[in-house]
Length: 385
Image (tube, rainbow, N blue to C red):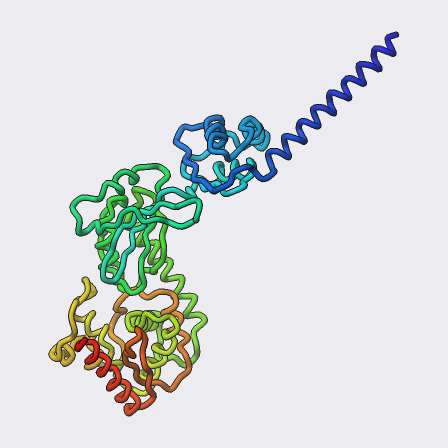
């Protein structure tokens, strides 16, 4: 009798274990299989929230079928206590495992609001952008110049203190160090004083993600470190026989190339013209250096050069001095640095605007004069229309 009872008990235990195993296997499949979300959403996790609250919201928005399984899966994988505050992009068909991974990762928001402070050559502005989860594109909801406007728009002040708002500094190629410092001073989401303007040319144009309260001097130090690394690498891989002996001179050349053309495919040709002129003992004769000698990099000239300015003897007037000016005239991007240290191999000595935004290049003075005549005709036609 007892043997019979024991046998039945063992059978029941086996059946129970099999049932539990089946439930576990089913739960694992449900946790890892694609979810029901038909269109991507942006999920905002508030500070102090928990996995129950988040899973219930996801269920209400159609991202998960069974919030209990999501919570059990998070517990089983030891992620329940890793929930981060922020805004997270939950993609179409994301599994519960994918969602848990997204909201418990490094805590970097992947959607929602982004504040981009673009430091440009002629103007700087803050843009408040919202990511549209359905399209993956940002919609601009506000634009303003913090240095020129006394009050920021409401669309900015409403999101500036939110924990999931991301901040980014986007520094354009060709801005001067003075322009960068002045722009950073106007950013109310940064902190700390700036002791002085960094050396011209030694700030790397790039995109820098920052946190509210980031110290301005630390950001400038990062910009200098990045530019130093770029210059060092490019110098190590430079072409042979260049007419400058130090990385500092190469950086000066790169800044001239940066200011002379905004057409990426022209940088190597423009650099080759200046390199060839240095080799031939010709003066560089480039307007941007003259302009820098007038403005000292503090803003833009805003007008054409006068004959008296072209004739004036200054350290930056390359119509009057031999060789390179004493310092860079702006902060060049990586492509211009590489062009200066690996220019195209040409016999070009001249270039002038061609009316399309690019330049017409010439090997001889006669070719150059023809190109200049064509450009003046284009200018005259534009002025008459």
